[in-house]
Image 1 (cartoon, helix red, strand yellow):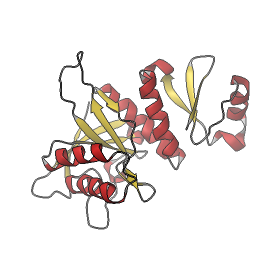
Image 2: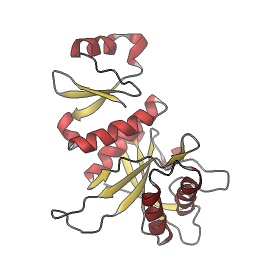
Image 3: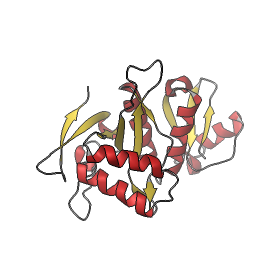
Image 4: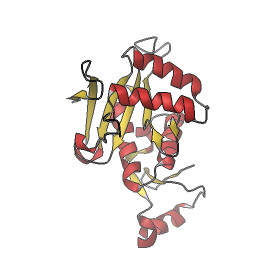
Length: 212
């Protein structure tokens, strides 16, 4: 589980992959140590900017799964961008064979205070790069975020994943087959968010729309 410590100024620092809780003084020393500082990064804003505790924990869990500093920063950026447009992060990993799978799953809020009773789900590719060229193309020609890509990753999770989120994966796959699973790309390098619209005549591709 990732460690988050609020500093005296209320800002939040995360160290992926660590389980030890440091005193503020110890944590500050780690920040100032050149040999350790590359494993740490400060989240923009303050603790309350990241929503209630379950959302903060979901974010920390996703950060903890990141394999690089840049990947972790991309996840934080995706969280911020999707929160801005009314989505909340699902505390699930739909990965298989290590880091294969969909990056992040979000949904709109539901319940008595929500504007809609049925949540909308979104698969989000979180990237540290500046442009949509950061999105990879798999060996069969499917671009990350495309209709085919998302569908094949969900199918592979059901076959090869640990099964802990099988019900959600099936639900998302049904939505994907009906073209009702939203798809986004969050690009940290350009501080941008793109909605990836399916292209019916070529499900390996998408038509991007930048979200203001």
